[in-house]
Image (tube, rainbow, N blue to C red; front, side, top):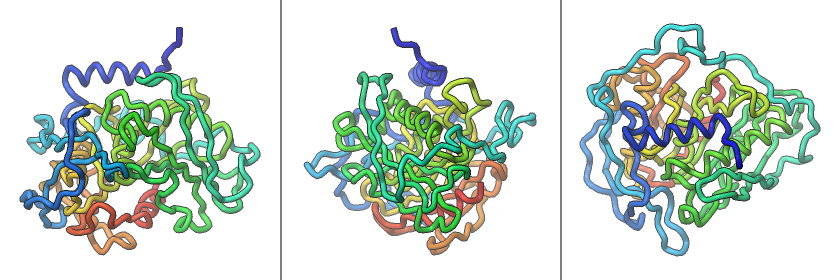
Length: 386
């Protein structure tokens, strides 16, 4: 008989809680699994009348968890549920109680420190800066054992004694796994380790498994993290995730589950997977996600005229983050200020009531459709702030 890890036990318990009452207070966001969306090719809807932090309004369309597949299939998503818990709907936020943990959060390890992975000092697994594929086994999934693939790209002149920032990435439905944002082109001498996660097509069409509370992506992320920390050198307190379209739903989900993990446990070696911050582009957060309800920084990007993924998907994810991070109010009434960042054309705002340890930024251009405005240079600046 196979024994569940402590993290997997927590996820299962969270799933049971979701079935009874949702993903924590104020987090009924995203779309229910198994429902159908439009074909992803519809035109923008009428304005929803909800002002953005930048004063714009945007259209609301049906949701697709990514670009339509080459065979004409669509993501199996429905319009997001805009309803939040009572506290969030009323614009209130629970301040984090004072405590000895990081940012005043009890039992939260000091994420400002450098925490080298056990792989520091090990010989590099590859000798160049190209993408290399690796296969791992994830036995504990809702559909049984699976073999999964991830791609690793090391920085130039990789130093096995330097604790680099590490960025997980996910592409859109049907997209090639390494067709992700080129953070190495903006990292410069600092360098960055990039990890592209490959979809398991067939489980959720040609998309990531981005609408199920027992997503196969959770054990996949844990397995990849466990393997990487043994063979490369990175800072376990500076692990990020970024994604577009279906990869953005993945980003929201993985971030929500593995946000700011508590004190490290004995397994896997080095402690649990800790996602320090996220940068989702054009996605959302399903209501069934077994969120940890721990605070985490995020920089969301979503164009108002996105015809494939509902703009409100990101709004709902941000509303949940505002509450969990201990900020004031909700989208549209929480105080903001312009957030200057390279290449964003003054379309980003920071929510000013959030604790400095857990900032929330939203870039919401009026136009750009589903594919435009991938602000990876601004995302890198954001990740560099941690």
